[in-house]
Image (cartoon, rainbow, N blue to C red; front, side, top):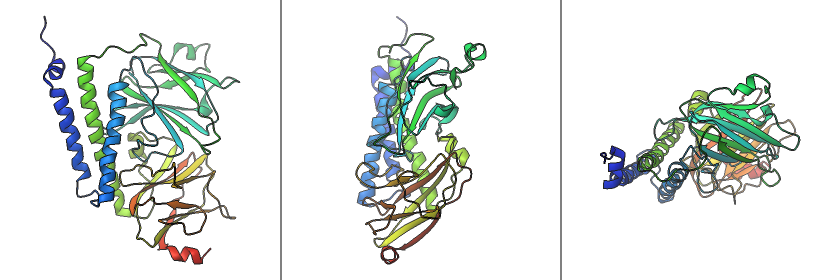
Length: 377
């Protein structure tokens, strides 16, 4: 019998599990770092954040990591949050291999925005999620009954260059490893999500048995993902403290490298308020396909939008007569329109998004006493 490979030996003697545990333990140093909040409330959220990242990592790398048999899953949702997740979005993703060819089939539904992207890298291995191809619903050829089909490949399908110029094609590169789907809803209750499936079409399309070498890589990838996410986004939060309670535009190249939607202009920052203070944000929205604003905690997790008003978009916000909008962030309801709840937090992160806007105005901000807002109603 041949000698076991290094990965097989690591599985046999337990080094894979030891490295996983050691790397996961190292992620705790991010929660304990000087730049992280050290009060009991925010520290508890930090430890919970690591458990959520671990759940997402297991689903991504261990349970659904076989690119031969991809399946869309939600690894960011109501109780797994990361990287300023948008409450208006349904996020779906799956593992892919840029050397394979895939087919996505489904029905469009009625969601306001539907986008498909291929990505290379990951937060654990490279610290980035570079977009290698992007396709959105308005550019899709869709049947009258809402059905559509997309070919995902590194090379343009030959059929598309001959008699099938209308064939939907989502490009990727040989190093692409993730396919992400964003479904954005203006009205969460009324809009119908797209129903989508994916399959490999140039070879086997069934999962392989557990393999020691793949499991070794999956355990390493899972732990490094947790550490990489925690380090990256804690670093962003620390950097945003330099312009607390303001909303400057986030560097577009950095956003794209982190897997941001190429159609979105992001305005990220940190907020911090005293018990009797409120943050007032004002801007006149330009012509755009969509905009929203949200509150998140220090770890860039959206606050609990299931039960509290923590975000607004161009459907839910109430505009002034002149077309401008005022958003108010406060610990308690000041009795004004467009109030957002801090959900027990005295600090955190925030984000304003413009999607396909004709211009990108920077929102104006000011901190006031909450009582002043009541008087000014």
